[in-house]
Length: 486
Ligand SMILES: NC(=O)c1ccc[n+]([C@@H]2O[C@H](COP(=O)([O-])OP(=O)(O)OC[C@H]3O[C@@H](n4cnc5c(N)ncnc54)[C@H](O)[C@@H]3O)[C@@H](O)[C@H]2O)c1
Ligand SMILES: O=S(=O)(O)c1ccc(CO)cc1
Image (cartoon, rainbow, N blue to C red):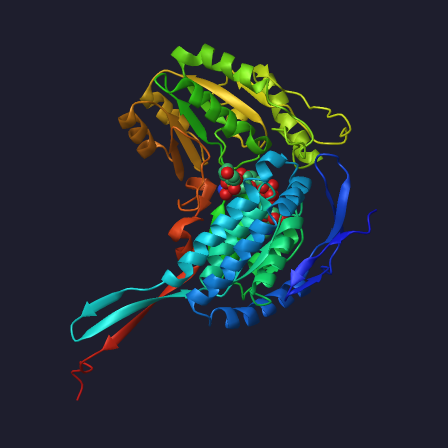
């Protein structure tokens, strides 16, 4: 057992939760990185009280003052990019070549965007008869963020950036599988000048998240996680009518028409399934390919997928790292078996990978199934690993109907050179985000959120600020109180 313990961060101090200890592992080696303690009700109460104190100070600043402090946090994050990215690799198993340019950088971009927006928060004015009304956009108070393990620091930034810019305090609970970088973000905010209590990190498993979601003094909960967790949190938030934002799972379609730029579509299908070992919620895991180009498409995918380098995530050439845990590897391998049992054709992959010197790691080869049919479990259920299912289609109406035949509705993609068809498909697809001729592009300027069971509300863009503020309407009388009373 290691002596290293990753703490929580309450009221400006690193402290250990008062609950049970569990361990966090390096997915590439299977070795323990550190111990972590669950936060209990007492820890949650202490954090909420500190958040209320922090909120009083922070919400009294002007947007310009908050923005200035947040800009300092951005600068520190960028200065510490490589150190934080290396921690992210150690915690998640994802390749360094991704973490070094995406994870911390996209988090910093997010905080930068909302730091700039903080001073622009304003209401509207409504001229009335002998009166006028105006609205104020006010912060909600103490908000809770609950994170998944695939993009730990990005998720912490996507939630805290708009929350703090709007004047709220946030208590963030990272996934128990990736406790490290949210803690570093708390240190960065404090160093930048964010008052103690305004951004806190409570470590712990689902029970800690449930305590936060149920707390009566929490105004809002934003969860990134699976659909079942989202449903549980929403049920518990209903008791005190908390606001919720839900960024949940998906089984998104990527539709490739015969007139698409062929090579671009192959590239997108690979990126949409193998980036971050396939552990991306928006992944286009149901790849619908028009029958006329199907054999060529599968052959080219197979050829290029064979070139992907699975290995030590810290090696700069590695393109596919390790899955998050042994349990998740087993789940993914279980789905690969189910795919074969259900009659799909294994085109490539389908096995674990023993990386020399990292035999305890949770590596799975990028896997492609062809001859998939809609009812197959690998086509219906979220696998959240490097497993692509290819389905043939004949015409637009048919593929639209089949693409929409799911309870999820996170994302969708269309590849075609016919722009009218691209827009028609985007209008018809039941998804929160549709990409035309690209996939998984999530710039901070663009709203991000799911439809159907994939989510409620949005992150990123100015829309996110609406989810971290409430509107107050003020009526101002300029005349007399109208009254028929004597
Ligand atoms: N839509 C998005 O933006 C997005 C992004 C990344 C991941 N995801 C989804 O997340 C899932 C994978 O992540 P995961 O395995 O960490 O998900 P998960 O649902 O198991 O856990 C997510 C978080 O919720 C916490 N939690 C668990 N039970 C809870 C409860 N009862 N109350 C409060 N909190 C609770 C966990 O401790 C963790 O921090 C996939 O379904 C993926 O699609 C969605
Ligand atoms: O946070 S996620 O929604 O899983 C996500 C989507 C796309 C990308 C690509 O940058 C990263 C994370």
